[in-house]
Image (cartoon, rainbow, N blue to C red; front, side, top):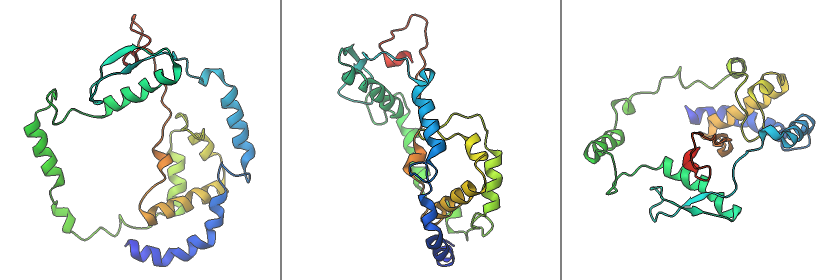
Length: 209
């Protein structure tokens, strides 16, 4: 299906590739994004009110969180946020302090990596149809309009109000993503604002957020 799609649509994509230069990072339609960036830059409420002197992880095994003394140098203390997120995102599988049932975890891993009966089935042509412009337009309408923006500052409400030219641009991106079977790494980025838990907790520890 993908090979057929490439043959039928490569010429269309090449013919319209110049339109992909119309992005928030060029001068073509930079006015709206410039206003948005200026607003975000001047908006003090969007600035994180976090202490710059934090406790960092001193554990030799970075999957385990072990707090050290408060780092007085802000450029060192800021690393605590990344260290704590790393600790939260990595389990202790195959570690002496692991809280998991390793035997059952191994069985689950083996099952997930085993061939599935559906792997040998013919792909459903209905599910493999090339996305249409109307589908993209309809999905944009269904996006929750008041969700927070990502690192680029573009909200769903902006996309929904951006008009037909923006829909054409988004549709071209969707076609390319469909063809190459991957998406831009920036789409996996998010803005995270730690919130202090209060209750007298240590404000210099990322665990308290």
